[in-house]
Image 1 (cartoon, one colour):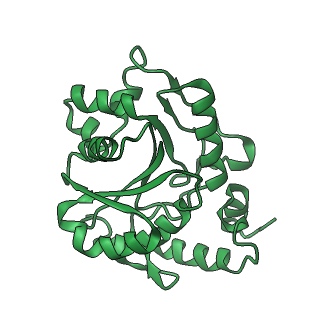
Image 2: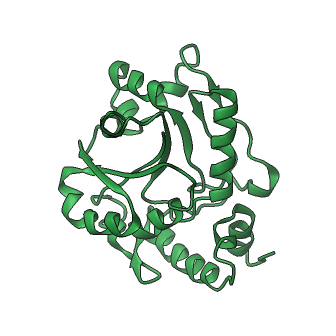
Length: 227
């Protein structure tokens, strides 16, 4: 079973309550789930702290996501809980501040991970906030057992790519149409949020709904030059 597992919380220090800020008439978190719902997966999970279950659950239900509550700081344990609860074999890891994930790039990196039987796969060179990670569930469960550093547990995957001797890692440069390492399309600051509103409305004018989730289209729209 392949599952999207999305991590999100409310208490951001740089942009408090950002998950519930409106983006195109719906909360930011819903827009993230709306985009990720276009990935062809068997299951969609929102892994959030216990104190976020009440405000997040109606949004998750609307978007077709299962809610898995867990530790606020130990995010790795949230992923392990989801894996065990649903019998997940591979995780597409995503975060709640990225409403403009490149869906075509996400499909491609997951396909490469499956072909290579990689424990971890993620493109380098994407705009900040555009990518996901494809991770074998067994690798995440091993990380949960062995990782002891705070950063390794809060950020989920560092234990894997810090131990290339233990895991098969696939971290290729993204294909040219998706490259934009200097671009920022995550939502982490008030400035990011202002840009996200502008970008969302520009993409919403695209007649083909599938097109607005494609990486090259998002990059060109951001630069003011849609294809």
